[in-house]
Length: 142
Image (cartoon, rainbow, N blue to C red; front, side, top):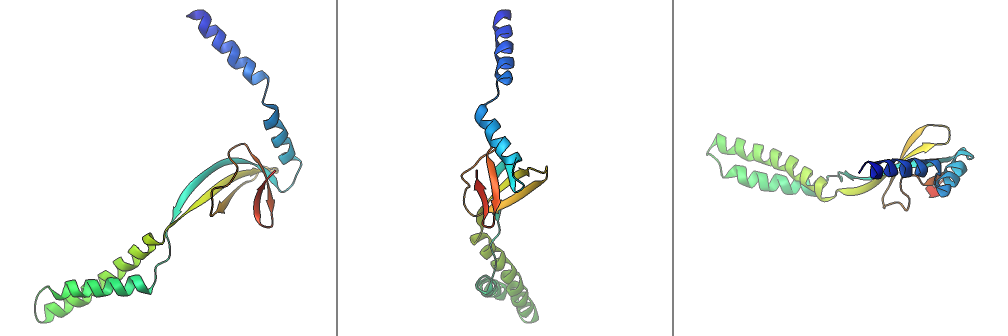
């Protein structure tokens, strides 16, 4: 058991003594370019969509109809108005959730040491450790 542990430690040390040559080439290429960097992280985030008049009006109608079912006289009028206002707000929030979208965030350590975040609509073709270059159109893998 002790020999296996020693062998594992020796192998782990040997692995760090001989770094991946491809990783070194990508990192060296990124260090030579002012607009280049190394990807640190890539992850997805949800973004709320935009609300609009359809959600507000639809929610207000439903809320007003439900509020109208409560009470009588002046109480009925207040309930109708309150239901329409609350329904408009809820309808707008529902529309924002329906229009939600996923974006991909890439965190890059630039060659000058700064860390920058870039947002893309689609999953990017790179991952952590990839060398990338900042162009006029966004990031591009080197």
